[in-house]
Amino acid sequence: MARHLTLGTHLVTGALVASATLMLTGCGGQTTTSGGEVSESAGANSAPLFSKLPKKYQNSKAIKVGADVNYAPVEFTGEDGQTAIGIDPDLAKALGKQLGVTFQFQDSTFDNLIPSLQTGRFDVLMSGMGDTRSRQTGKDETGKKVGPGVDFVDYFSAGTSILVQKGNPKNIQSLNDLCGKTVAIQRGTTSQYLLEDQAKRCQEDGKGKLTVQAFDKDTEALIRLRQGAAAADLNEFPVAAYNAKQSAGEYEVVGTPVKPSPYGIAVRKDNTQLRDAIKAALDAIIKNGEYKKVLQKWNVADGAVPRADINSGT
Image 1 (tube, one colour):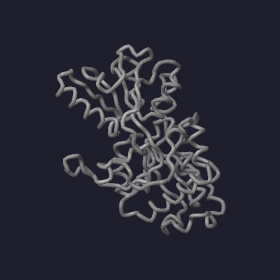
Image 2 (cartoon, helix red, strand yellow):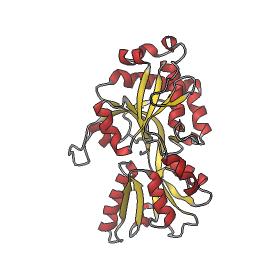
Image 3 (cartoon, helix red, strand yellow):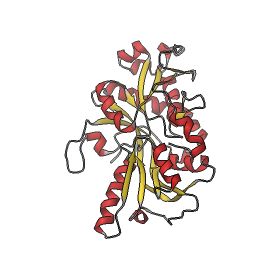
Image 4 (cartoon, one colour):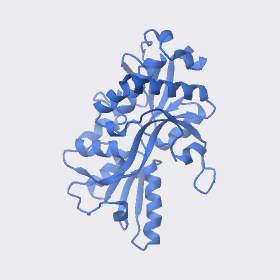
């Protein structure tokens, strides 16, 4: 997350009833719950980049995508409570056209995504996940091993924004203004790590304790903010802006985005052929304009990248 929700009280319920498994076709946009029949991508063998895929995916014509499908507008569920929609599913559809495969979105908690990628439950992760050095290496800033490392194909640039109650009753404009306050956050996101670093600075500067409340879903953090139990919630800028817009005046974004960093499609380090095929597909949709159309649809064109990079996050 970066991740990678969402809406005001009257809109939260639909996102919370997401089914455990969601599937998104690579060509026609058809979606279905797990176990249903999904039509094969038309002319898959003639897709421009089909030959770049490992044989496993050429045979199955499917790529399993792990995502926390509660993070609008990056990914969330439609009105039917099961269809994955948003920036990532739309980009996956465009990538599927290039690769001749179906991207099958499966819902999971954010902090479970990388472990599930390593066990083979997922082939890739596409969940508004920030490409960070610690996620690349699986080590924290001290060099301590904290988990398995992954490779990223970077596809979007996002900074962290602060979301507060409408009218900004706590007069928050920056991270420093969070000292002495309680902030709600989704567990395992880059925003959580940013807050934890800020909490140390607050303590060192004697500005009061910053209490971080971490939840499995950002929808839970938003409820705490709405109730006034938290002074703020931190999200990447497209998510924060979307929440504010959809909340019917309950929330607003304050200050300017902090520490812009890339979102990446995560792939196991031993799956370099799939990683490189996805990179080629991303470059192709950037070139043919499909990438720009998706970002414009969701009003996040400011986060566009000029090309696909691998592990560009720091």
